[in-house]
Amino acid sequence: MPTISVGRDRLFAALGQSYTQEEFEDLCFRFGIELDDVTTEKAIIRKEKHIDEEADDDEEIIYKIEIPANRYDLLCLEGLAQALRVFNKKQEIPTYTLADISKDKLLKMNVKPETSKIRPFVVCAVLRGVTFDEARYNSFIDLQDKLHQNICRRRSLVAIGTHDLDTLQGPFTYEALPPTDINFVPLKQTKSFRADELIEFYKSDMKLKKFLHIIENSPVFPVLYDSKRTVLSLPPIINGAHSAITLQTKNVFIECTATDLTKAKIVLNTMVTTFSEYCARKFEIEPVEVTYDDGKSYIYPDLAVYDMEVPLSYITDSIGVSLEVEQVTSLLTRMQLHAEQAKSSDNQCAIKVHVPPSRSDVLHPCDVMEDVAIAYGFNNIPTRKPASIKPLPLNELTDLLRIEIAMNVYTEVVTWLLCSHKENFAMLNRVDDNSAVIIGNPRSADFEAMRRTLMPGILKTVGSNKDHPKPIKIYEISDVAMLDESKDVGASNRRHLAALHCGATSGFELIHGLVDRIMEVMAIPFVKINDNNGYYIKLSQEPEFLPGRQASIVVRGKQIGNFGIVHPQVLNNFDIPDPCSFVEIDIEALL
Image (cartoon, rainbow, N blue to C red):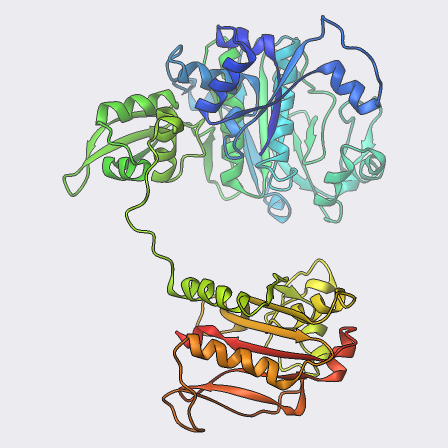
């Protein structure tokens, strides 16, 4: 969950009301966010530098507020304050509009075809008549950083560039050129760099070096020019110094280059809707025309309102509270969603919700239902027990077997679902038959495949606890993964039961007794071989067990597991000095 830091006094001024810390914590809870910490700027610096000093009385109080990861509109003080004002019914929901400009006077961005090799999309907008002070300017920059870390995925999906429009001359072009053909003075520098030199220069920069890999090995770099061939930016690395915004900037040109067009639109909408309140014409944004090489052109930003119909019954049934249409629409208004009554196709009462461009997180009726629940108040929703809580038969059987095996003085263990390829086969004396589910990009050799059996985890547990007093009696009931061509993912899970007895007298008969007890509680009678009305055991030839001291378990004509004395070589592979007897059963087959 992202955390934003805002000055308490500035936030309260924006809200038009002061709060005690307890009152503000309550407001945050009611809105679905959390006051995570209260500190000061100097305290943060002292903590980073490990300085032990007394706090000054005049230090500005900083609130660190945790917000939902999908609420990009709350990533700065402006967006948070506006949302809380609407929530407290102190402000109407803003209506965002595009400036009425004839097409021939629109700023234009022309996209060259070479950009498709690296970052094919760009979206743009202009904020006219912006009034910055130091706090607003810092918030504007901080919002870009928060978006870069969040939805932009460290600039790999979207990179934001903001420029002083009065220093530039349109139309603009978005190109992709060899790095040796790009020269400009980057932000906060005084000399010109060639793009390939710039990459080397920033390899020692702690902030920017983590973005270099995005374009470093590409034969062409993305670059934006104005009509005078002045470089606006080299996305996603750095902007040009020529168009840097300052406190005196009045007209801000925003461009977002991207590999994901949808996320680029969301980022642009977040930037312009949040800071358009500082424009000379409040909540008005000037559009830009983006034209591609194929002749297609698009007007950005897209501030269209998204309409969604949600059945009233879905909202009330999900929350568990009976609400009238007027109550629901009022609650949604507090969450910045215009709503009105509508008739659904089956003549049931429905709510028509108008989702503004600032609420990109509202994608599904469940998002609308959640906002109603937040505005209603989670503490006001009565607790109730669902009418029916019935476990799945497999889970119910699993729990019953856990109790039964524990009553036989076995201790439950939980082991990793992933294991190494070696543990799946070679360490169990098995030959690789390509039956394991393999992880595509394993982080280490210890977790490169899904376990086919519970045996490796059980044996590793004993090997790590071999000095424990004997006997060691442990069990596990969990899932293993099998290749399954009938499934869309190519694999399926199976619930297995495994138990192990380790000690100087771990004979075949000890684990055999546990098998008989499991079958007894499952009401499966012991029968003669080839009788399909119960279970029987027959000699098996599994390589992980000692020859002649192992058996297969057959239930109603189907083999469901094996048990026996573990082969000495397998024990040696897992560094276990004492003999062990082991059983593993596919309990899904017992259903």
